Amino acid sequence: MSEQPGQKIFSIYRFNPGQSAHYQEYRLTPDKGMSVLEALFHILERQDPTLSFRYSCRGAVCGSCAMYINGRHRLACNTLVESLKGEKVTISPLPNLPVIKDLVVDMTSFYEKIEKAMPFLKTLEARQAEIKQSPKDRERLDIITDCILCAACHSACPVNWTSKSYLGPAVLNKAYRFIADSRDDAGEERLSLVDNEDGIWRCHGIFNCTEACPKKISPADSIIQLRHSVFAGKKKSRK
Image (cartoon, rainbow, N blue to C red; front, side, top):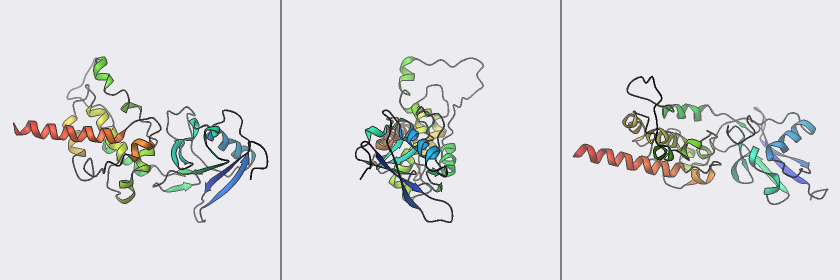
């Protein structure tokens, strides 16, 4: 039990190469409004300087501090300790990614897959002036552009757990983000990249990715839209 009123037990995943992984417990009484990231800093600075974790912006826009907190994918910077029920807070690295040390995972394979989506606008010719976009066209991108590449959806996807070749929900969401962009001219090229058994047809529609996303994006819906686009293109080519 906690030794002081309001005290929390932080059970944190610890791993060093060459050593056995384990959970280590720390106790602290969080201040009101303290985030999990701030709690980790408190532990690092006052209890255990060997603790490793990743962070950057502290404002939920970089995705660096994505972790598995109390059984859910969350951003440590915007998850308040007081919002977590019970006296114990269990913190693990993102599942399904190689652990480098403690809460730090290797994102190399994730970023390599993101590059396959060509995450940039492509036009048929060089443009010297701004490409204008109507409010209606921009509205199609309002949510899907909020992806911060935190890899929470990638980590949560059960297909990724068994298939290293599957592009994954983050990649497919990124592909749809540019296909849906009225300024992009590479729609057919992007569709050809995802229209295969390692792309949109490997998704089982479980929606783990949607549930895991801390920015309320639904990669599963993006995959559905990509499938509609593929069907529409094939139907048009038959006419």
